[in-house]
Amino acid sequence: MSKNNKALNLRDKISGNEVDLSLCNLTEVPVRELALFTKATVVDLSCNNITSLPPEFCNLTHLVKVDLSKNQLTCLPDDVGNLTSLQHLDLYNNKLTVLPVSFSQLRGLKWLDLKDNPLEASLAKAAGDCLDEKQCKQCASKVLQHMRGLQDEADRAREKRLLREKELERKREVKQREREAREKEARKREKAEEKEKRRKEYNAQMAAVAAREQQKKKSEDKKKKNGQAADKKVVEESAPKPRRSLIGLMFKLLLLLLLGLAGVAAACRLTDLQKEAVCVPVNVALDDSLSWAKEQEGVVRQLVQNLSSAAKEFLESTQAPKN
Image (cartoon, helix red, strand yellow):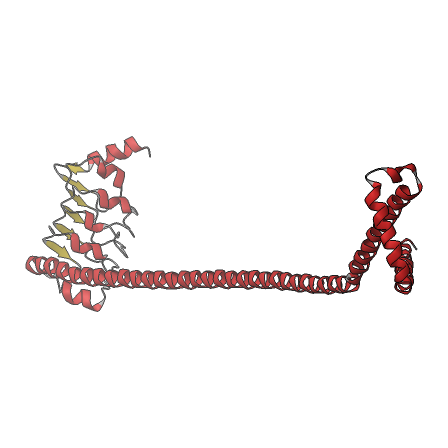
């Protein structure tokens, strides 16, 4: 059957603000069709084979009175509390055991019938017998009160659960922070150890360099001392030589002087220069010297002998470096 036919059939069931769908052998509620008629605030779905209400049923917030008696309902939608306009609800002779917690939100509910349902003990006690109008009104009040208690318990349980979850999250965060702190401390310790290792390596390198420098300095000092000792030895060995050279030089000068004097004396004695005024004192001195020499012949011989020895030594000393 098409949607229009269903709508047409539902229109045939409407009388004023009431929709009578009882004894229609329904297995489900025509929610879409009922949503089209917002002025139909009273719905009779009794005496059918409905086993459950779809979640969309909770969107029919215009409903004021609903009769679902003598069906096969085992539960109500979780969001049944959205039916805020609902005042009258007949659930007689179904298979309900519990009601959803959101049932406590039906604050406008004035009348409720739950008899002939296998309700759990606490809910059955709150519902009472529902044998007359007064008891059904009391049922609505007491069941709402009972469901509010369950709602409060559920809220407390949810709050406790949230607190536990929050506490667990806090503990996880604390553990995470502690783990991060340990890891940070470990990294810091590793860096410190690495730095200390590099410092020791640097100190070892500096110590090695200092040791090499000290060894080098010792070697240089040793070489310097050895050089100074060698120089001192050379100086000591070569020290007499200047004296011998000085004596030889003096003998050379003396010999040259004697030769010069002999040359001057020979020139003034044997040449025509003897008559010159310059040579007169030379010849006189020569004559005096010869006279004195004859008188000191022995001394002269000794002097000549000494001069010969000195000249011989001088010649030997001058020839030694050449060899």
